[in-house]
Length: 586
Image (cartoon, rainbow, N blue to C red; front, side, top):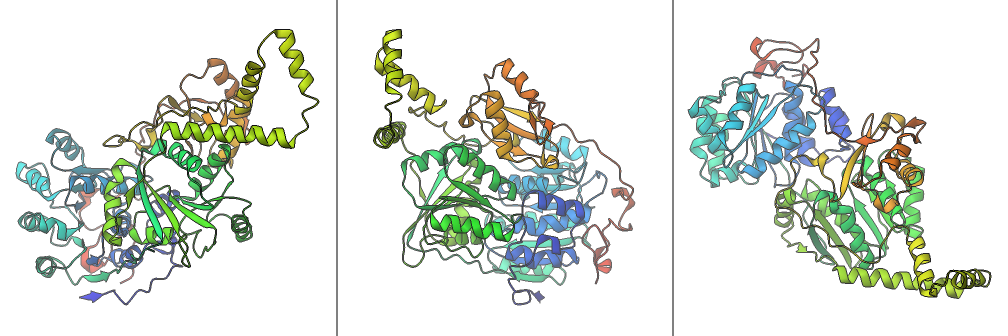
């Protein structure tokens, strides 16, 4: 058995672009903003691309899904929709099966007519059978439901080329050993196997000894030590309400320097722009920002010129700023080691620090993985009450009034107000209130409660919008070199909409999506449609959702019915030593 524990050093310079992934899969990874693999990914992906069976020993939350998903998808990229699955992934629970299926779908976004089908207990058989009849490249399922479909004759595993067992030890603890062995017996004996487990009990040894062929063994010891000086809290919040929740926390709680982590480069700029629009001094750093600009931005945080830095994991490497008192995981990391590294930006050298983690309802499993790996409970964060927010906002507004009274010469303006009061016969208090409303520019001193997070989030992440908001489509995108700040400025200036009324912004390749109030007047939309951003009319209109993606036949597409002898995009089994959309060296 090959052992990769010592073979691959944890080289932080490794990038996903260094792997020989299918170009379309690599592009999806880049679109998601991922640059550097986690240790389990760095050590496992090369073995799987070589066609080796693999045993991966790593805790939950170390990035295992991408470790097996990326080479698997590279192997079957470009294949026509098969009559029976080419890959089967087993997971112990319904929640994990759904999570894995969603991850694979995101990595397969450029693969055309590519199908990933989750099958699990607790759901009607009807949609699962329909999906199997239509054909799926990859089936992700729980062992019990997979066996049920085998017995019903609705699932044929004879053409499975890749079999993955995720959290194998958990499946065995749940009593699925016989089911797993029966599933192995139903698959093609030449299939490639990747088995991931947090532990290596005797039952796992028996399975690997019987069903895996000379597997490479990868062991990852996650770094899970967190400082006792860091207070860790989490908030369960819907994705569309993260920004509102964040700004409310920052309104009430006092911090010095803050670093916020998001997953992608694009999101660093979007979040920084939204925070600036809400009155916070924020800046973004990511892998696309030149080093000189990065250094200048970090120095601005260090000196207090800005208070908030929005960053990706890669961009924040080596960052050590003494005044950072709060780390915000705006997006939960997919591996526990990243979480430990992130919150380690505060609470250094004996100082105390705070860490806040935003968790959407479907991400609770990742929170549990973090707690298990760090052996520490993350305490729930209690959101500021409506009353606390109202008191804070009122006090800050009154402080602004006091500052203006004490620092400005108002002698020129007093006669104007006196004349208005006398001419219009209105109380001075009403005039002051009207002027205050002008200053607030659509903002309010009275807070509204945030909606409670739902037990399960929406199935379509892209369709999430806050209550009272509608998603609009703009005819400008990344190809036009547009940025969130330009969109906010155009909508606010030309549409007369307060920047605080502008919600989530998502910039795509050739268009952008923005959440705006549902009750926008038709005249505002007409005016906005003629507005230009980056030299193009934005042609704003309500978003109708993602159109169906037609299947475009490629010249190198290979049908599943051609068996195992096909060239560039095929799987050649053990002798060909291939696992990917191209031939790999032995």
